[in-house]
Length: 553
Image 1 (cartoon, rainbow, N blue to C red):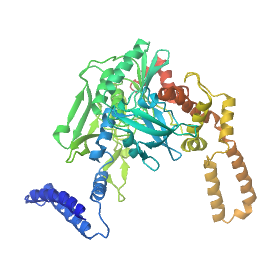
Image 2: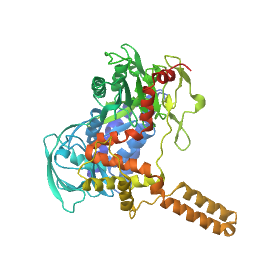
Image 3: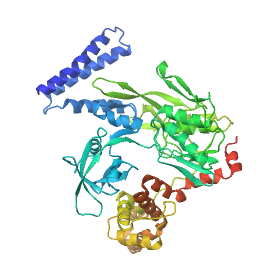
């Protein structure tokens, strides 16, 4: 109780001091008066809860709950970063950390190596995809969450860590010692030629150095004969604003307006211009986007679209037009606050959700189409604000079949790839590798006794039909027909492994290639079946079509 009272004193006294300071404001309508009043209410409320609540109160937990709830009421991006989270935050912005260089996750209740990085300490020590981690140092990992495991694995470069592991397919455990290194997450997991004259760059996030990485990739691709470029921003959640500005500058001349921000205070009313020497202002360009392309990804995509500098292909982007800035707090903590909205050169803001207006349940609605405004690109094409970016060429999003979704979520595709790698020491290069019919049949045999239960749309409709028949009191009359239909649905479901053979085989090939060629191999294995990528190649190989898309309509 003494510890809690001390914590209470530490929390309440500064708050009361602030309240007293603001209380000198005599105008009750002044915002400072409202701040002081509510801080006073909060501190006295906390005091009463601490004194009289039936159980012991944990100051850190209850305060964190209150802070998180307060910030969540504003938007999902305004967040409190405690002292023990600072390192994770730095990793997000810089892409650097001290560790073993491997993505680790839980598969079937086991802490598993998901993807080691190339030339990483993890890979050098012999860790492979599918290996199970049982213990980190003296700590058993059973029951630990993702963040706990991450913290245990991270540490200062050149420090040693001992892992107790079990290689996939083995019953024996093994202790291995790994020396942590300074890990730099590559924000360009792949760049290369995808067709004659067509270069491809995949940017996964906008961490420090992203623009320089794109520049180097472009120079490399042009030296290999690239006459056009595909920039893949699908699934890219964004990151640093200045990196998005610098990436735009690679394709646009100096001294152009790239993006401007507007906030409540004057210091956030800024215009960002292209200040560097571009690498190529004429090379044909396609940018790939989807519903998970957000923030900085949308700045780059929106700028390219507004200047008619390239063609956008894919699905409508996420719609995050908000800018965050971190502010220091006491005790080495920080708060990341939404300070402004950003606007691309045409003047549009692509923010899709209006966090300033919520319904009675506190839910946020999308900006209605009736309030969306039309803007013009440099060449006179009409574009709209308020709902993300609409691509110039829309490719319908592919949705996995229920059986494929089940095989993925139940980790059976992941596990079979491990089995395959255990039995095959090598495969062809990722872009040439293909499972034969015999290989696929081996998977069908392997998976037959596994649990991959799923519900098809037909089964859902059949249940609705049963319910409707019982409600209408006609069930007894058509029961035989319904039973016949049920049998046919079951037979169709049994055949799903063959009906969706091509889709499942593609997933298997991608996962298997990752076992031999890591993330680059997994990326290359997707190329032939990637509709957006193939459409981009098709348009770039047809200059007349490319120019037609960018013309005023």
